[in-house]
Image 1 (cartoon, rainbow, N blue to C red):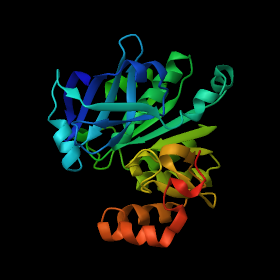
Image 2: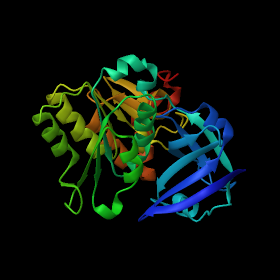
Image 3: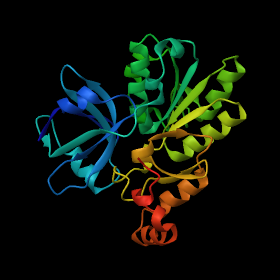
Image 4: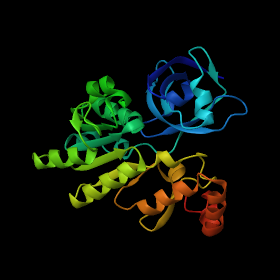
Length: 292
């Protein structure tokens, strides 16, 4: 059992929980995820690690209620426990593989959309702790749905908030802020975008035009977390990949976005899942041999 040290509602249907999981906290790095089961008979839910405290032995998760399983999970309170917490899973952020000296020479831009702010935060925090500044754009539909603003302010070099309805910060989509920053003379060496697939698609489309290498996190399409269910199957640079074992980070300019988004919609229905299984054959799940 994994005790919940703190549980709170961040905003409408978005929750944050600090969970006692010392072995995960000891090994995890920014960009990785874990799988939780609230109860013994619960669905396995992959969630990106939002923060971790190695000394306290805790990890922080942020999730949005989108179905029955997350709704049940949101009912857990401080002092309750998760039945299972497995991790860290997936590959760490590519930034973790670079030397700090090289990172300090780069101009890095993060783009977070909605709940995607949660997986962006640990990467920006990790850079900040190592003396590397990064610009961060956080987009939200409205001010009321904005999360982790104060936490992000504390670690970002420059933080730009934008809301679709103009209720807070700048008005408009995150892509407009990217255009404005570049027009102001900012030259970025890399962009890391995490959020809804539609947002990441259009960020990647824009940054390709601007010649900014872009990394995206495909964590929104993970279900099983082991490569076997086939939900997170994507095509990157013409090759079949699985977000949970080959990623979750990929070259945003090489992802087949239209195929991934169409597939995501089909996977939501039983009939759609069967159709994908039949049409994709041996490459439908992790048995294809393309994942390690």
